[in-house]
Image (cartoon, rainbow, N blue to C red; front, side, top):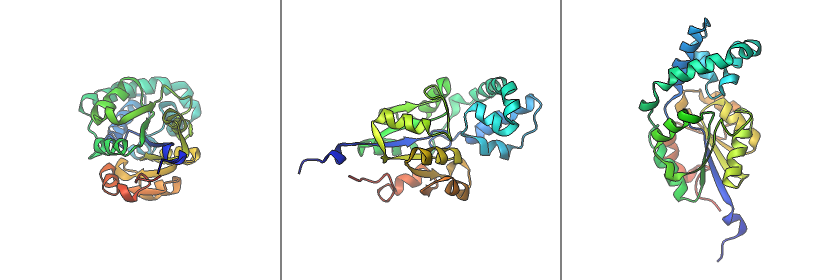
Length: 229
């Protein structure tokens, strides 16, 4: 029997990167904590952790308020970038992350990354992930005007894949990821490897939760990313 139009249509597996595929969230926390401390701001690490996943300007606004962000976001972002850059050569993919992407590509999914990272940071993440052959596109901070929790990064990823929201899945580890995916109308898979509590991801719109890429891979056939027409 020849394939139907529905079977021919692209399916997008959209992934956040930091904390979802590469083990970076706590490195970002340390870099932001030090950047803020150097600028005279005493911000608890827990508060910074819960803001990870936002773009730099939005993160500063979330932690310090909009007025302070307008004055200091650029300098704080530059300080964070310098501090975080010391880790570029030591970034590590989370267990089975690369294998998960390669398996999905083999299964016919268009694998697209949707991340607030850009430039050298994104290059370092891709090097750590070591799965370029499976990645069909990227929606980075350089490609969108609004970062998560706005839906634009996910929508851009769907456009790159040529896929509809109904046939797509977004995998992330923060509440900002789940909100962005929900607003874009895709199925949202939450991973706990970024350190955000299960109940927070659930409330933010996760349709299903797994411990990390390895757990998702082990349950792939029963997950939203299992084979389907």
